[in-house]
Image (cartoon, rainbow, N blue to C red):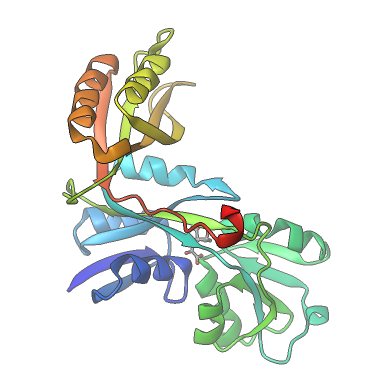
Length: 283
Ligand SMILES: O=C(O)C(=O)C[C@]1(C(=O)O)C=C[C@@H](O)C=C1
């Protein structure tokens, strides 16, 4: 059975990301307190893969995870765009009036700012993953303390839901990568993540973008990340979707990109996880 390490414990969104990604396949889910320790255990082969959040549709990119991937030479074997629904959880019998402190993962706090602004007197603590915060409230019988997390966490740690769907925007998604230490071959891939930097001369980045556009590669994300060892120079992570899955054009683009950049590596070729489009949005 494959083992996959997550940031957090069972009942976290990382846990849900793994179960959605692997569907019916059985996997051994291993907990990790931080992203750093997750990556360490992937690198030293204590586990087969890691599942790592990389960006959220409200709060934006989790920048340290971009650098963790490249510094540790990790490759991407797949992605999952998980709908994230946050709820306010507390011990059974508690009410909103009893609460004076809320604790959760920092990304979850960022996704619920509008709700939290209604309770300015609550102390906000950015802590571990959403599920560990929920479990601690139960284990330590913390009265007056709420956590933010999923309904699964409420169920697993026997907490009451004091407020449902408290994220700022209904359509809230976090994108996760499945990462490993070797390039992962994915049959029928239609998306790729490239990492590059240039010699920082005029027009270099626009040349790269022009190569992508002229080879039917749709740019879905570009993220600049400080280049380690330089001051105010940047490397770039780009995600591209292969329009009409034209592999010839994709490989030609890679050849041209090698000429246009100082350093280029393909971090992953995998299947795009499209966020579902709801009926109301189609109209
Ligand atoms: O705390 C959790 O439950 C997580 O899985 C972490 C995490 C994150 O890293 O962004 C995952 C999804 C949500 O965006 C909030 C938190």
